[in-house]
Image (cartoon, rainbow, N blue to C red; front, side):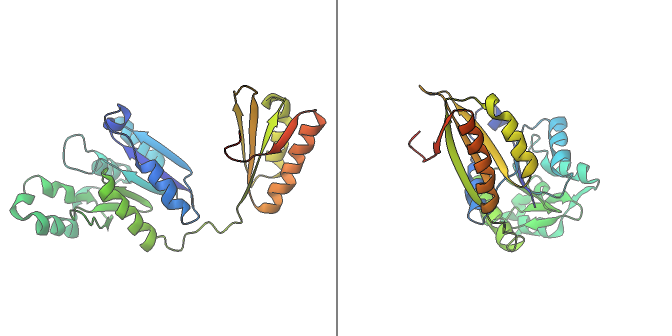
Length: 250
């Protein structure tokens, strides 16, 4: 199962607020042996939001969506999710009850709108103010406020995805290559990608006083070592210099 994040809000794109969800998800997923496959940041424009959501809801990915589920005119996530799913936006009995119990008469006429959700959705409990998030299939919509959204993410992972783990053997090796350029090693990189499609390859050039390349392979341990030997042989044949990378020494 691939995992994605949809982060919504003009305030992030224009710099009024700094996103914190991306780093939180990286750390939280890593504790469970998982990682993000993609992240989208989109503003509140209705057309742009719908375009992003049609992408994020099109497949079978597990998606965490942050922002835009309030009741102000710029909060378009609930309606857009309903549009993309092809269902009406309707009062959700349990969500309405939670808002009424929390706010009493002050729930009307505006707060109660946050209980109008895509028909057939499931609720995500909000431990802070009881205004629930909601789930459509494996796409989970939460507030933009970290103090509310992050416990909701933890709840989802602990309750709906507690058995989802990356059980593949995961190994990584990185080498530093000097005296050569990426273009000189491109043929070998393409060969590795073709021969070892399950590995994740990364080539990062660095423009230091002495330019160098950080070349990494990640995946099943035996394949990582075999494929890395292919690269090392190509580096040595070309007369370049390599060494195993140690963080902080380059």
